[in-house]
Length: 156
Image (tube, rainbow, N blue to C red; front, side, top):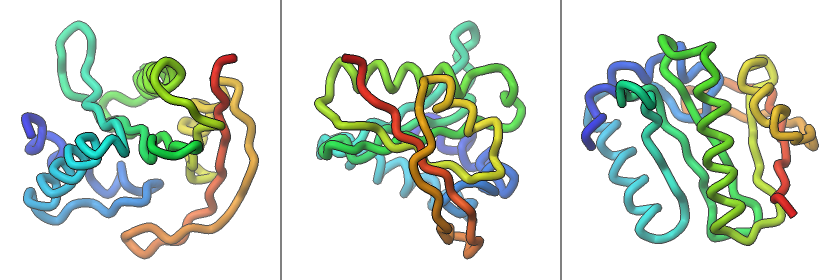
């Protein structure tokens, strides 16, 4: 909840352009997301984290490993636009993957991403993931995106 106002301010239409969630219309929507994430953590269904800069502890985004109670968890992140291009997303995904390797028994992690979102597609590719599936998906804003799904495998 500490970052609710910041999340609401920076989780805008530009950020959600390639994402499933819609831009929150009011701060209460953001608080509901946070409460839902906490509930998912308490039920051992997901890990949702705030991404902070190491040096200043400035909030720059969220990361999540969802469906951790299955053999195929799903990984997702978003970084506020002012922090794009610095490798923070790649670093956050690597950290979540390392956590999964140490704490979960999984077959693979799915990483769905909009086809047009080239910077985000480079993240799973940097982990050796391979594209396995393409499909259309309509997001909460009613926009149909062409999705690319990657599978990221555990360290043996």
